[in-house]
Length: 314
Ligand code: DHB
Image (tube, rainbow, N blue to C red):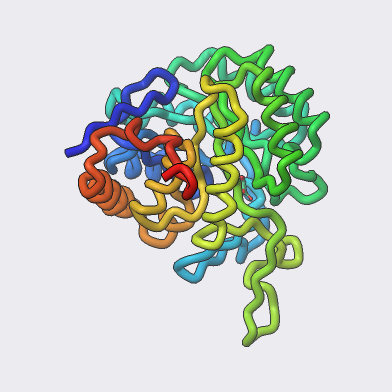
Protein backbone atom coordinates (compact mmCIF):
# COMPACT_ATOMS: atom_id res chain seq x y z
CA UNK A 1 0.00 0.00 0.00
CA UNK A 2 1.39 3.45 -0.85
CA UNK A 3 2.58 5.52 2.10
CA UNK A 4 1.14 8.95 2.77
CA UNK A 5 3.75 11.39 3.96
CA UNK A 6 1.70 14.51 3.56
CA UNK A 7 3.43 17.44 5.19
CA UNK A 8 0.34 19.43 6.10
CA UNK A 9 0.99 21.78 9.05
CA UNK A 10 3.64 19.39 10.33
CA UNK A 11 1.16 16.52 10.74
CA UNK A 12 1.84 13.08 9.29
CA UNK A 13 -1.54 12.20 7.81
CA UNK A 14 -2.88 8.82 6.67
CA UNK A 15 -5.13 10.32 4.00
CA UNK A 16 -5.37 13.39 1.79
CA UNK A 17 -9.16 13.56 1.97
CA UNK A 18 -11.38 16.05 3.81
CA UNK A 19 -15.01 17.06 3.43
CA UNK A 20 -15.66 20.49 1.96
CA UNK A 21 -17.13 22.84 4.52
CA UNK A 22 -20.89 22.88 4.15
CA UNK A 23 -21.39 19.20 3.35
CA UNK A 24 -22.16 16.64 6.08
CA UNK A 25 -20.59 18.82 8.77
CA UNK A 26 -23.30 20.90 10.43
CA UNK A 27 -23.97 18.62 13.42
CA UNK A 28 -21.70 16.73 15.82
CA UNK A 29 -23.30 13.50 14.64
CA UNK A 30 -22.45 14.18 10.99
CA UNK A 31 -18.86 15.03 11.92
CA UNK A 32 -18.51 11.88 14.05
CA UNK A 33 -19.60 9.78 11.05
CA UNK A 34 -16.98 11.45 8.83
CA UNK A 35 -14.20 10.66 11.33
CA UNK A 36 -14.91 6.94 10.91
CA UNK A 37 -14.02 7.18 7.21
CA UNK A 38 -10.46 7.29 5.83
CA UNK A 39 -10.23 11.07 6.17
CA UNK A 40 -7.26 13.27 7.07
CA UNK A 41 -9.72 15.21 9.19
CA UNK A 42 -12.96 17.11 9.03
CA UNK A 43 -13.93 20.69 8.26
CA UNK A 44 -16.90 22.11 10.15
CA UNK A 45 -19.76 24.05 8.59
CA UNK A 46 -18.70 27.70 8.52
CA UNK A 47 -19.58 29.04 11.96
CA UNK A 48 -20.97 32.48 12.66
CA UNK A 49 -20.85 33.94 16.18
CA UNK A 50 -24.52 33.08 16.80
CA UNK A 51 -26.57 30.18 15.37
CA UNK A 52 -28.18 30.94 12.00
CA UNK A 53 -31.11 29.29 10.21
CA UNK A 54 -30.00 30.32 6.72
CA UNK A 55 -32.06 31.05 3.61
CA UNK A 56 -35.53 29.67 2.77
CA UNK A 57 -35.70 26.28 1.01
CA UNK A 58 -35.23 24.91 -1.57
CA UNK A 59 -31.69 26.22 -1.20
CA UNK A 60 -29.62 23.24 -2.46
CA UNK A 61 -29.99 21.23 -5.67
CA UNK A 62 -27.89 18.64 -7.47
CA UNK A 63 -28.38 16.27 -10.38
CA UNK A 64 -25.77 13.77 -9.18
CA UNK A 65 -22.95 15.59 -10.96
CA UNK A 66 -23.32 19.33 -10.45
CA UNK A 67 -24.79 21.29 -7.57
CA UNK A 68 -26.01 24.78 -6.81
CA UNK A 69 -26.62 26.23 -3.38
CA UNK A 70 -27.66 29.42 -1.64
CA UNK A 71 -27.77 28.05 1.90
CA UNK A 72 -27.15 31.38 3.64
CA UNK A 73 -24.79 29.96 6.29
CA UNK A 74 -27.19 27.81 8.32
CA UNK A 75 -25.09 26.69 11.31
CA UNK A 76 -25.28 26.02 15.02
CA UNK A 77 -23.06 28.91 16.06
CA UNK A 78 -19.41 29.13 17.09
CA UNK A 79 -19.88 27.77 20.66
CA UNK A 80 -21.45 24.58 19.28
CA UNK A 81 -18.48 23.83 17.00
CA UNK A 82 -15.93 24.65 19.71
CA UNK A 83 -17.72 22.15 21.97
CA UNK A 84 -17.98 19.60 19.13
CA UNK A 85 -14.22 19.74 18.62
CA UNK A 86 -13.83 18.58 22.24
CA UNK A 87 -16.71 16.09 22.40
CA UNK A 88 -16.51 14.12 19.16
CA UNK A 89 -14.01 11.22 19.27
CA UNK A 90 -11.43 11.00 16.50
CA UNK A 91 -8.11 9.31 15.79
CA UNK A 92 -5.18 11.28 17.14
CA UNK A 93 -3.81 11.83 13.62
CA UNK A 94 -7.06 13.30 12.26
CA UNK A 95 -7.52 17.08 12.15
CA UNK A 96 -10.42 19.19 13.32
CA UNK A 97 -10.47 22.20 11.00
CA UNK A 98 -12.88 24.86 12.19
CA UNK A 99 -14.42 26.86 9.36
CA UNK A 100 -15.53 30.34 10.36
CA UNK A 101 -17.34 33.09 8.48
CA UNK A 102 -18.22 36.32 10.22
CA UNK A 103 -21.45 37.83 8.90
CA UNK A 104 -19.59 41.13 8.80
CA UNK A 105 -15.97 42.18 9.09
CA UNK A 106 -16.08 43.03 12.81
CA UNK A 107 -17.59 39.65 13.64
CA UNK A 108 -14.53 37.89 12.23
CA UNK A 109 -12.40 39.62 14.89
CA UNK A 110 -14.79 38.60 17.69
CA UNK A 111 -14.73 35.00 16.45
CA UNK A 112 -10.93 34.83 16.44
CA UNK A 113 -10.67 36.27 19.96
CA UNK A 114 -12.86 33.43 21.22
CA UNK A 115 -11.13 30.53 19.45
CA UNK A 116 -7.63 31.03 20.86
CA UNK A 117 -8.44 29.30 24.16
CA UNK A 118 -9.50 26.01 22.48
CA UNK A 119 -6.60 23.57 22.09
CA UNK A 120 -8.71 20.99 20.21
CA UNK A 121 -8.88 23.20 17.11
CA UNK A 122 -6.04 22.01 14.85
CA UNK A 123 -6.53 24.72 12.25
CA UNK A 124 -8.94 27.44 11.21
CA UNK A 125 -10.28 27.87 7.68
CA UNK A 126 -11.47 31.48 7.44
CA UNK A 127 -14.13 31.66 4.78
CA UNK A 128 -13.70 34.94 2.93
CA UNK A 129 -15.60 33.68 -0.11
CA UNK A 130 -19.19 32.95 0.91
CA UNK A 131 -21.30 33.87 -2.11
CA UNK A 132 -24.68 33.64 -0.41
CA UNK A 133 -25.01 36.45 2.10
CA UNK A 134 -27.51 38.97 0.73
CA UNK A 135 -25.96 42.48 0.52
CA UNK A 136 -22.51 41.16 1.43
CA UNK A 137 -20.15 40.97 -1.52
CA UNK A 138 -17.47 38.27 -1.51
CA UNK A 139 -14.69 39.75 0.64
CA UNK A 140 -11.83 38.07 -1.19
CA UNK A 141 -12.74 39.92 -4.41
CA UNK A 142 -12.15 43.29 -2.69
CA UNK A 143 -8.38 43.21 -2.34
CA UNK A 144 -7.94 46.19 0.01
CA UNK A 145 -10.59 44.89 2.45
CA UNK A 146 -9.16 41.37 2.08
CA UNK A 147 -5.67 42.59 3.04
CA UNK A 148 -6.99 44.61 6.00
CA UNK A 149 -8.97 41.68 7.43
CA UNK A 150 -6.02 39.32 7.06
CA UNK A 151 -3.75 41.71 8.95
CA UNK A 152 -6.22 42.16 11.81
CA UNK A 153 -7.06 38.46 12.08
CA UNK A 154 -3.45 37.29 12.01
CA UNK A 155 -2.65 39.77 14.81
CA UNK A 156 -5.34 38.17 17.02
CA UNK A 157 -5.00 34.52 15.96
CA UNK A 158 -2.72 31.95 17.61
CA UNK A 159 -3.63 28.84 15.53
CA UNK A 160 -2.64 27.50 12.12
CA UNK A 161 -4.73 29.57 9.74
CA UNK A 162 -5.96 29.11 6.19
CA UNK A 163 -8.21 31.15 3.94
CA UNK A 164 -11.00 29.69 1.78
CA UNK A 165 -10.75 31.58 -1.48
CA UNK A 166 -13.24 32.14 -4.27
CA UNK A 167 -12.28 31.20 -7.83
CA UNK A 168 -10.08 33.72 -9.62
CA UNK A 169 -9.74 33.89 -13.37
CA UNK A 170 -7.15 36.46 -14.42
CA UNK A 171 -3.36 36.40 -13.95
CA UNK A 172 -3.36 39.81 -12.29
CA UNK A 173 -5.81 38.51 -9.66
CA UNK A 174 -3.48 35.61 -8.83
CA UNK A 175 -0.53 38.04 -8.68
CA UNK A 176 -2.26 40.45 -6.30
CA UNK A 177 -3.81 37.82 -4.03
CA UNK A 178 -0.53 35.88 -3.83
CA UNK A 179 1.38 39.04 -2.87
CA UNK A 180 -1.13 39.68 -0.07
CA UNK A 181 -1.03 36.06 1.13
CA UNK A 182 2.77 35.77 0.99
CA UNK A 183 3.22 38.59 3.47
CA UNK A 184 0.20 37.72 5.63
CA UNK A 185 1.62 34.99 7.89
CA UNK A 186 -1.10 32.41 7.06
CA UNK A 187 -0.29 28.69 6.73
CA UNK A 188 -2.63 27.46 3.98
CA UNK A 189 -5.29 28.30 1.42
CA UNK A 190 -8.32 26.29 0.35
CA UNK A 191 -9.20 26.82 -3.28
CA UNK A 192 -11.87 27.07 -4.62
CA UNK A 193 -15.18 27.89 -3.01
CA UNK A 194 -18.19 27.44 -5.29
CA UNK A 195 -18.35 29.55 -8.46
CA UNK A 196 -20.63 32.37 -7.34
CA UNK A 197 -23.98 33.47 -8.71
CA UNK A 198 -24.66 30.67 -11.19
CA UNK A 199 -28.19 29.95 -12.40
CA UNK A 200 -29.73 26.54 -13.10
CA UNK A 201 -33.25 26.39 -14.54
CA UNK A 202 -35.91 23.67 -14.51
CA UNK A 203 -37.43 23.68 -18.02
CA UNK A 204 -40.66 22.08 -16.86
CA UNK A 205 -41.53 24.71 -14.25
CA UNK A 206 -39.57 27.48 -16.02
CA UNK A 207 -38.13 28.45 -12.63
CA UNK A 208 -34.68 28.39 -11.07
CA UNK A 209 -34.06 25.13 -9.19
CA UNK A 210 -33.34 26.96 -5.91
CA UNK A 211 -35.42 29.68 -4.29
CA UNK A 212 -33.21 32.30 -2.54
CA UNK A 213 -31.51 35.16 -4.41
CA UNK A 214 -33.78 34.69 -7.44
CA UNK A 215 -32.11 31.35 -8.04
CA UNK A 216 -28.53 32.61 -8.03
CA UNK A 217 -26.19 30.33 -6.09
CA UNK A 218 -22.75 28.81 -5.80
CA UNK A 219 -21.95 26.19 -8.45
CA UNK A 220 -20.12 23.01 -7.45
CA UNK A 221 -19.47 19.54 -8.85
CA UNK A 222 -17.81 18.22 -11.98
CA UNK A 223 -18.11 21.47 -14.01
CA UNK A 224 -15.86 23.36 -11.61
CA UNK A 225 -12.87 20.98 -11.68
CA UNK A 226 -10.97 22.72 -14.51
CA UNK A 227 -11.33 26.07 -12.71
CA UNK A 228 -10.17 24.46 -9.46
CA UNK A 229 -7.11 22.91 -11.08
CA UNK A 230 -6.14 26.23 -12.66
CA UNK A 231 -6.51 27.99 -9.29
CA UNK A 232 -4.41 25.38 -7.45
CA UNK A 233 -1.75 25.50 -10.13
CA UNK A 234 -1.62 29.31 -10.37
CA UNK A 235 -1.31 29.67 -6.59
CA UNK A 236 1.24 26.85 -6.39
CA UNK A 237 3.42 28.80 -8.84
CA UNK A 238 3.15 32.03 -6.86
CA UNK A 239 2.84 31.25 -3.14
CA UNK A 240 5.77 30.87 -0.77
CA UNK A 241 6.53 27.17 -0.32
CA UNK A 242 5.52 27.31 3.36
CA UNK A 243 1.89 28.05 2.41
CA UNK A 244 0.11 24.74 1.77
CA UNK A 245 -2.78 24.31 -0.64
CA UNK A 246 -6.02 22.42 -0.06
CA UNK A 247 -7.76 21.76 -3.38
CA UNK A 248 -11.55 21.82 -3.52
CA UNK A 249 -13.81 21.44 -6.50
CA UNK A 250 -15.16 18.80 -8.81
CA UNK A 251 -13.69 15.66 -7.29
CA UNK A 252 -15.66 12.56 -8.27
CA UNK A 253 -12.96 9.88 -8.28
CA UNK A 254 -9.36 9.04 -7.43
CA UNK A 255 -8.12 10.43 -10.75
CA UNK A 256 -9.55 13.83 -9.85
CA UNK A 257 -7.64 13.76 -6.54
CA UNK A 258 -4.48 12.78 -8.42
CA UNK A 259 -4.91 15.83 -10.69
CA UNK A 260 -5.40 18.18 -7.72
CA UNK A 261 -2.18 16.87 -6.14
CA UNK A 262 -0.24 17.11 -9.43
CA UNK A 263 -1.19 20.81 -9.53
CA UNK A 264 0.18 21.32 -6.01
CA UNK A 265 -2.54 20.41 -3.48
CA UNK A 266 -1.43 18.77 -0.21
CA UNK A 267 -4.98 17.82 0.75
CA UNK A 268 -8.33 17.89 -1.04
CA UNK A 269 -11.91 18.61 0.02
CA UNK A 270 -14.92 16.76 -1.38
CA UNK A 271 -18.26 18.57 -1.50
CA UNK A 272 -20.89 17.73 -4.12
CA UNK A 273 -19.83 14.08 -4.46
CA UNK A 274 -20.09 13.66 -0.66
CA UNK A 275 -23.60 15.12 -0.78
CA UNK A 276 -24.52 12.76 -3.64
CA UNK A 277 -22.89 9.55 -2.45
CA UNK A 278 -22.60 9.96 1.34
CA UNK A 279 -19.56 9.24 3.53
CA UNK A 280 -18.71 5.98 1.69
CA UNK A 281 -17.23 8.25 -1.00
CA UNK A 282 -14.01 8.52 1.02
CA UNK A 283 -13.04 4.82 1.01
CA UNK A 284 -13.93 4.48 -2.70
CA UNK A 285 -11.86 7.49 -3.71
CA UNK A 286 -8.98 6.53 -1.39
CA UNK A 287 -8.72 3.09 -3.01
CA UNK A 288 -8.97 4.57 -6.53
CA UNK A 289 -6.11 6.93 -5.69
CA UNK A 290 -4.04 4.01 -4.32
CA UNK A 291 -4.65 2.08 -7.56
CA UNK A 292 -3.41 4.99 -9.68
CA UNK A 293 -0.33 5.41 -7.49
CA UNK A 294 0.42 1.69 -7.71
CA UNK A 295 0.06 1.67 -11.52
CA UNK A 296 2.47 4.59 -11.74
CA UNK A 297 4.79 3.16 -9.10
CA UNK A 298 4.44 6.25 -6.91
CA UNK A 299 5.10 5.37 -3.28
CA UNK A 300 4.27 8.67 -1.60
CA UNK A 301 2.25 11.79 -2.28
CA UNK A 302 5.51 13.73 -2.48
CA UNK A 303 6.45 11.67 -5.58
CA UNK A 304 3.93 13.61 -7.68
CA UNK A 305 2.73 16.61 -5.65
CA UNK A 306 3.15 19.80 -7.68
CA UNK A 307 4.89 17.88 -10.47
CA UNK A 308 2.56 18.65 -13.35
CA UNK A 309 4.50 18.06 -16.57
CA UNK A 310 4.34 20.07 -19.77
CA UNK A 311 4.60 18.59 -23.23
CA UNK A 312 7.82 20.35 -24.19
CA UNK A 313 9.60 19.05 -21.08
CA UNK A 314 8.57 15.41 -21.38
C1 DHB B 1 -22.41 29.00 2.22
C2 DHB B 1 -21.98 28.76 0.95
C3 DHB B 1 -20.63 28.76 0.68
O1 DHB B 1 -20.12 28.53 -0.55
C4 DHB B 1 -19.74 29.00 1.69
O2 DHB B 1 -18.43 29.03 1.46
C5 DHB B 1 -20.17 29.21 2.96
C6 DHB B 1 -21.52 29.21 3.22
C7 DHB B 1 -23.83 29.03 2.55
O3 DHB B 1 -24.61 29.60 1.79
O4 DHB B 1 -24.20 28.55 3.64
